Length: 265
Image 1 (cartoon, rainbow, N blue to C red):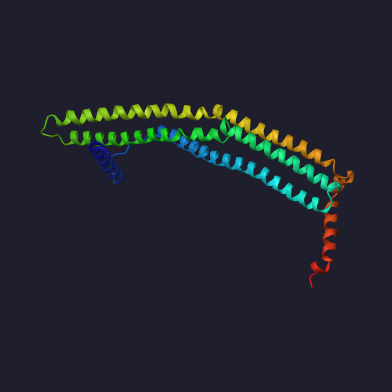
Image 2 (cartoon, rainbow, N blue to C red):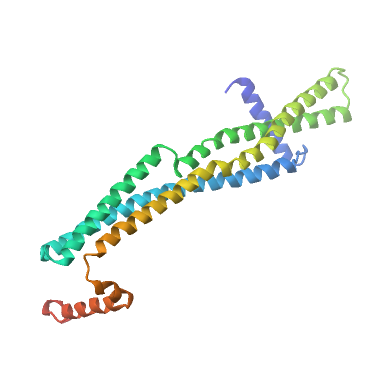
C-alpha cells in the first residue's frame, strides 16, 4: 500500500470511529440500502444454489455407481446358487441394465460439466459477486470521505478561520468528494436492480436442462427396469402389490431361525 493509500485508510478509520461516537454525521441512503439488501439476498441464494447443484450431481453419480455395485453383488449371490435359474437370469439382466444406466449418467454429467449445466451456471454467476462487492466497498469508502469533508466544511463555516484559503479548500474538498460518491452511488442504485432482473433469463436454460436430464434418467431407468421384470414369474408383481412378498421373506427367515446355527440357544 502506498503512503497516500495508507493515509486515506487511516483517515477513514478515524471517520468511522467519530461516526460511532456521534461526532460526525453518517449519511443514510435508504434507496441504496434497499437495493443492496436485495443484492445480498441474491448473492446468498446463488452461493447456496452452487453448493446444492454440486451435491445434486455428486448424489446422481454416487447413486448410479452404488447401484452398479449392488447389482454386481446380487449377481454373485444368484450365480453361486444356480446360474440357469430365473433369479440368476434376472440378476444378470439387472446388472447389465444398471451398468448401462451408470455409464449413461456419468457421460451425461461429464458432458454437462464441460458445457452449460446447472452446476457451472451458478458458479459463473458467483464469479461476478467479488467484482460487484469491490464496487460496493469503494462506494462505502467514498461515502466516508464525503461525510468527513462535509463535517470539515460545516466546522469551518461555524468557526471561521483567519486563513482566507481554508474555507474555499474545504468547500472544494466537499464538492469533489460529493461528486465522486454520488457518481458511484447512482451507478450502483441503477445497475444492481438490472443485475437481479437478469437472473431469470440467465438461469432459465439451466433449469430446463436439469429437468430434461431428470426426465431422461427416469425414462431410461423405467425402460431398462421394465425389461428386467420379464425374467420374474407373472405372479410376482401381483404378490408385491398385495404385500405377500414380505410374508414370503418372513417365512424364509423363520426357516433360518429353525436351523441350529441360527437358533437363540
